Amino acid sequence: MGTPEDPRDLLNERRAARVHGGVQAEDNVVELHGGRHGPANLPSFEELFLDHHDRLYRALYFITGSAADAEELMQDAFLKVWERWDRIDQIDDPTAYLFRVALNGFRTRVRRARSAARNLVPTSTPRDPFDDVELREDMRHMLLGLPQRQRAALVLTEIFGYSSEQAAEILGIRPTTVRVLASQGRAALRAT
Image 1: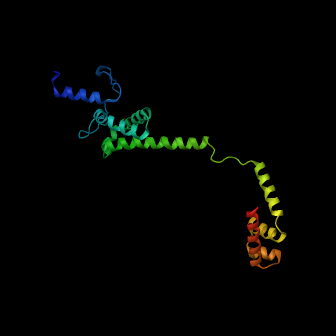
Image 2: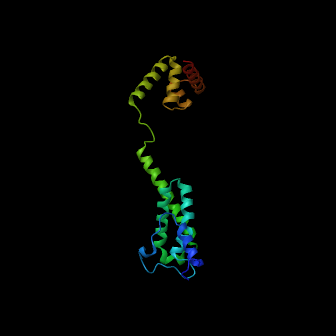
Image 3: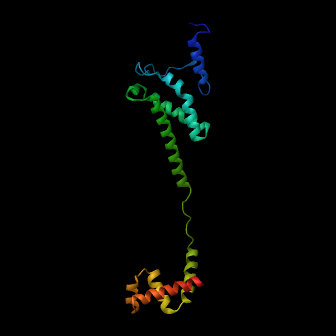
């Protein structure tokens, strides 16, 4: 049983070689809790770790593009599974749960990063009050270049938002005349 040709020794060596990063010597392992073994028909936490460590790491590396982020997310996922190991029999598929926990951790990080970026980077630039003054002054000069009736029709319909019927009542003319005057005024402004 203890010979190097023993298949169980080879299997254990292969499992240890698959683990990402360094592995502690067997006599240097610290036992955290003795009762962290799931039901008899489910694998032990160690077996789950050895069987899925590399796959989870590769998947997370592919998703994040960063070895450090993949490693950290993987560790967090295994830690959460370890914390719930006494209730592992209530989880239908521990492997799917492990991957789901890891991906949820990634999504949470992305959401937090987006939120932080939104808080750091202003979405709109503050308006310069001098630009508003210049724009009003330019509009005033352009409107003063129009005939009085066109200017009145444009100011009432475009700036104050009156309908052509309301502007017609104010000016004492027909609504069609207001629409014609406003149209002529817009055409004259585009030409300048």
